[in-house]
Picture 1 (cartoon, one colour):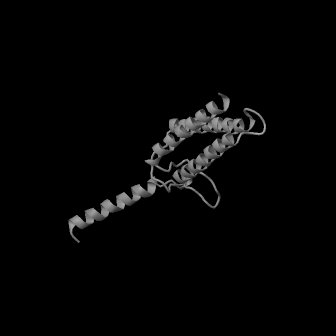
Picture 2 (picture 1 turned 60 degrees about the vertical axis):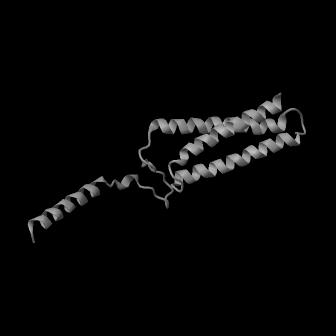
Length: 137
C-alpha cells in the first residue's frame, strides 16, 4: 500500500464517523406510530414560519366558515341558489387547497409550491370577501 491510499482510507473513515455522529434517530418520522417529528421536511423550520402558517390557516378557516354559514342564512330562509353555489365553489376550492397542503407536508411536492399555497390562500380569502359582499349588499 502506498501512502496516498492510506490517507484516503483514513479520510473516509473520519467522514463516516462524522456522518454517523450527525444522525440523530430520536427525531425520525415513525409512520407506524403516527408520530410527527421536530425534524423539518424541507430545510430548517423556523418558528416564524409556523406562526405565519397557523395564522393563515385560522384566518382562512374563520372567513370560509362565515361565508358558508352566510350563504344559508342571508338574506332569508330558504337560501338563494346562487348563494349556495358560491359556498359550494369556495368549499371545493378549499378541498383542493387542503390536498395541496397535505402533499406539501408529506414531501410529494417541491418546496417552491409553498408560494402557490400562499397565493391560493389569498385567492380563497378574496373569493370569500366577494361572496360576503354579494350576500350582504
